[in-house]
Image (cartoon, rainbow, N blue to C red; front, top):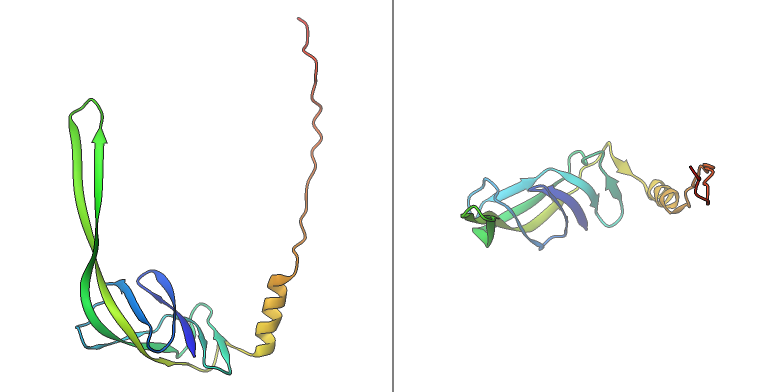
Length: 144
């Protein structure tokens, strides 16, 4: 069982037990955090593809800790002006562990035949159209 979710502006492939380090979530340490932006869910028998999200599906996570990421330095310099600017930044992050994946039913559910058909269409070679333009180029210089 796995799912592809969207958290903090990024997409993650998660399974139960997966640890994530995402942008800070507004939940206390030790509490549960439900991610409802599930793009794809697979429960071992049925694949559900969302448009854009799978209805009724969610991923239940536990917040392990809040921390800060590594420091990044931004340095700006303008030559011959005696001007320089240094700034540091540490991104606030949250560590999550996936506890459970709840697959939803209903709209957005794709059968194996539909998924196979979509994969075959994606693998089919695409027709390329090339438009040829004829331009006449002179190889000799004109004498003036």
